[in-house]
Length: 80
Image 1 (cartoon, one colour):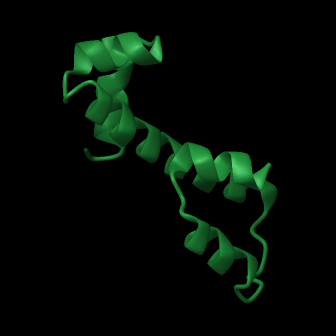
Image 2 (cartoon, rainbow, N blue to C red):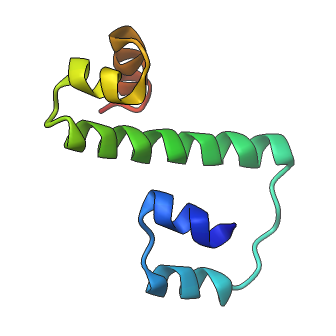
């Protein structure tokens, strides 16, 4: 599963190896960890989406199958 996520967010094999061999960090409570992961995913997805749409928000919204207003909301949330 981790490998699947690495492909989605574009981590390299070196980054994956560094993650596996890093010192264990204290675990966050599930709710906080999930919120952080969601925010990271949203930002990276939005960045990739806008790149694919050549910065065109209307086209990005169509590709993501969400409203243009929702894309603007995410852009504001992530300060992009």
